[in-house]
Image (cartoon, rainbow, N blue to C red; front, side):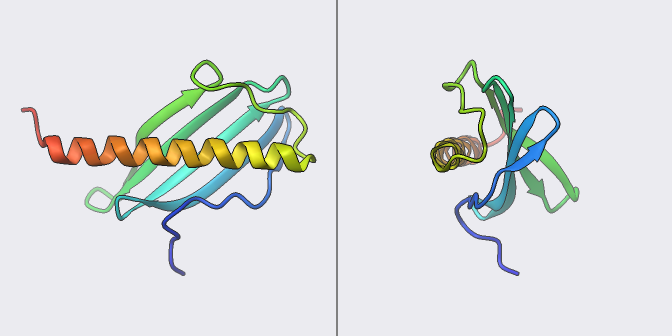
Length: 110
C-alpha cells in the first residue's frame, strides 16, 4: 500500500466525547499521522506526528487546538462538518511540511 502525499479524510468516527478524524500521509517524504479529536462543544486537539525510520518511533511535529484555530462544528453527520475538518487537516499538513522542511534546512543547532 502506498502512503498518499496529502491527507485524506473520508469519514468522521464518533467517540464518547465527540468525533475523531485521522489520516496517514507523507510530510517531506516521511510517513506522517494526522489526528484531530473534536469535543461535543467544538473544541479540538490536533497532532501531527512523523515516523522516524532510524528509531522506529513516532515524533510530534505539530500540536494545535481550538485556541489556535476556530472551533469545529459538533455534529459529525453534517457534510459541512466534514468539509471544515478537511480544510483544517490540509492547513495542518501544510504547516507541518513547512516546519519539517525549515528544520531540515536549518540543520543542527548543537
